[in-house]
Image: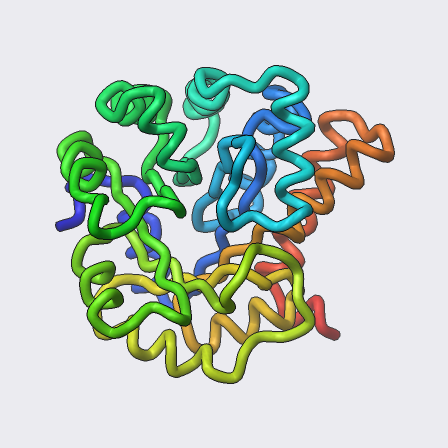
Length: 274
């Protein structure tokens, strides 16, 4: 059941009922700094994205490819702590309306304490918790606590997931279903798999928005995903821009503007292709 008045569910419903589509960028929290991520969130909010995934840096990521791993290592080397990701969103929430998803390993939640983590997320202004390494069989405590506190819990469905597992995930998750387009880790790819349309069609039967991630990096990818699904999730392409901006020595505002323009290009894929 969807928690009442959840900002993400409300935003997704408004966009989809109006005939629109969803773009969900992923950026690494507090990378290259807390101020930089705050500026990025403000710029993405102005761009009109449907939501933002904030990845919590973690030393042993399960599904993240080398681009995102690089950002994690750099953030951890600078002393990232979980509490900073809460401070970040609390500081920017009065200025932005965009829904924010905590993309976080369940190992981090477990060590922090489930109730404490969820309450901290609510107090900071997060709207969803997505834990890619949490199996559906072990998800009930998070789903129960998060739902009670008004947060949604999207879950990932892999192309290799058998029908019974898809059924379980479709029933347990809330907010949206994260359709993993390819087996393996995140990263930019040249094209999308031919079987993706059938995969999405099967997930639509659960009556929840279906958003596709992994390998989505170009305007033509977004356009292709939007033809078959409700939303596109773009991660490595944004984080690559962050890594390159850091290497080039861009300041906070330059970095945020670059990410914002990238989001706007992806939100208008037909224009970017011409």
